[in-house]
Image (tube, rainbow, N blue to C red; front, side, top):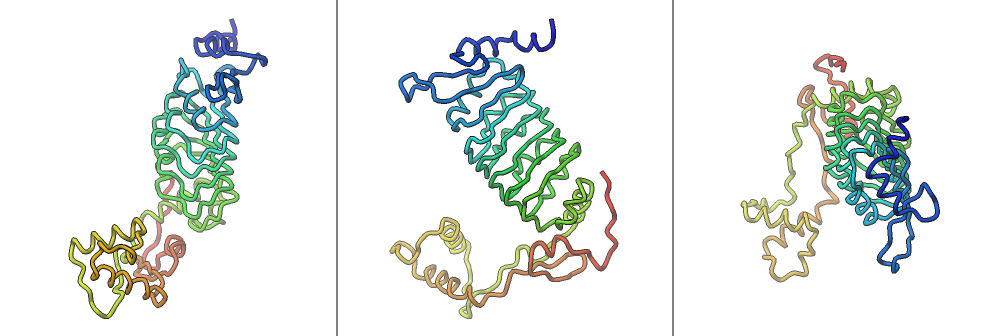
Length: 294
C-alpha cells in the first residue's frame, strides 16, 4: 500500500470522513448556532488541514476535537480575519508548515513555542508591529515570511533561530537593521543584529525633571503616578486622587511641549542619538566591530 493510502487510513481521517456531506474532500461539522445547519468547511487531504475562512471559535473547536493531531503536518489559516494565532495549534506537535497569511494578526500565542518541528511559518499580510517573542522561540524554523506587516525594528531574539535560511521582510517599514542590509539576506541581518546586541544605551533609565518645584517622588507616590499613567486614568475627574498627585501630573502634562526629544547614549563610543534606529544602526568610532558568522 502506498504512503498516500496509509495517510487516508487513520482514525483522524476516518472520523472526519464520517462527517462528510456533499463534497468528498470536505468535512462540515454541525453548527449549533444555526440549528444544525453547516456554514463553514474544514478540508482534509492526507496530512494537511485547511481551516481557511473560519472564525476563531470554529478553529479552536477543530483543533481541540482532532482525534489524532500528531498526524497533521500542514495547517492553513489563511483569510480567517484572525487577530492572533491561537495556542490550540500546539496540539499538532509534528506540524512542519503553518500558513497564517492574509489576516489581521497582531499577536502570536507563546504556546506555539511547543512546535519543535515547525520549519515554515507564513505570517505575511497581517498587522504585526513587533516580531513576537514566541516566534523567536521556535528554533526549528527555516523559512519565516513576515512580508507586508508594520515591523520597524527586528529584535535580537531572532539570533536564536540558528536554522533560519530565509527571512522575508518585503513591504515592512523596517528602520533597523537598515533596509539595504535586510535586502542582503539572513547572514547580513544576523550580523547587524549581533552588532545591535553589543550596544548599551547609557540613558535607558534616565528620566528628566518636569517642573521647577523639584517634587520628590516617594515610593508610594511613584507607584500611584505610574498606575495612573499606565491605565490612562482621568485623574482630574476623580476626587479620590490626592491634590499633590494631580498637581504633579498636571505639571508633567503641560511641560510635554517643551521637553527635549528622547536621547540615547552609546556605552561604547559615548555618542548621542535622538532616534532609536540611528542608535541601533550606528558604527561605533571607538572600536572595530567584529563580524560574527553563524
